[in-house]
Image (cartoon, rainbow, N blue to C red; front, top):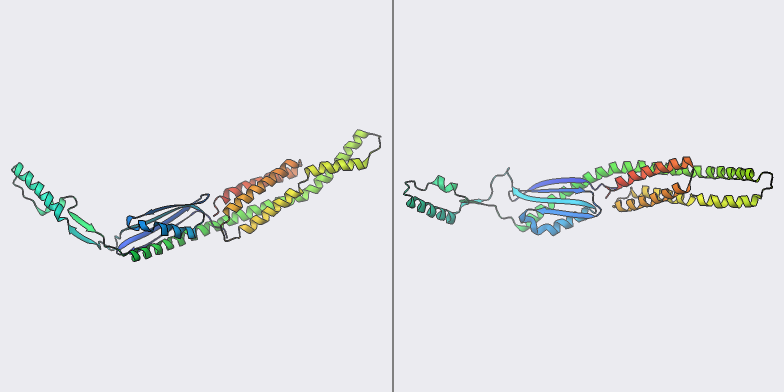
Length: 294
């Protein structure tokens, strides 16, 4: 069944004492457009990340975020050390100030800890294999959540599209029933009008029949109805497909709109004109909804 292009998925896991978070968001777009944001330690995996997402999503604007940060739940698991070279430089400058201005104050531990970058925290190094495995695992779960949401949205889209295309086919059926009645009415009125004009003069019924046939052919919409109905049935089949069909549905609706325009221009009947308006309204809503189908 069809899927929506709109969805969101999020997952997180622990990796080497740090928290690894994956978020994937997708919106409507004519093609597949990937935007990937990665924490510095993950930057080398961008190609693999794009490949993984492209295998799951075929259409839409997809934003992927993978962030690696200290897990507040586990505390500091890295190494905290004093930046002795920098502290020595600070201490030297402080001593110069004390001597220059003849100050009595001495350098204290509190002053040292107040120096910028006096203490350095180093995150524990992660093995490349461990980091890559954790990244693909959490990305996979985020993508699963994204796909699940796109399927739920797709179900709602499916129900709406199904109802509207059935409405279109119902109106097409009404036009089909109305066409021969319109033709019969046209033939009757045309013959009566000729009789009025000719008065007592004898009528050439063969000639009248020929003229009626020519005029009827010009207003005949049988071929357009066949194609329109065929497109509608094809539309029904496509929305049952598991493969991405958004572009195909959009093209099919363009063809249906062209056929109904032709029917509207050929027929002068009030009832057919009303059906044409109804069909155009449904096609416009269908095209709007199809823009969100993958």
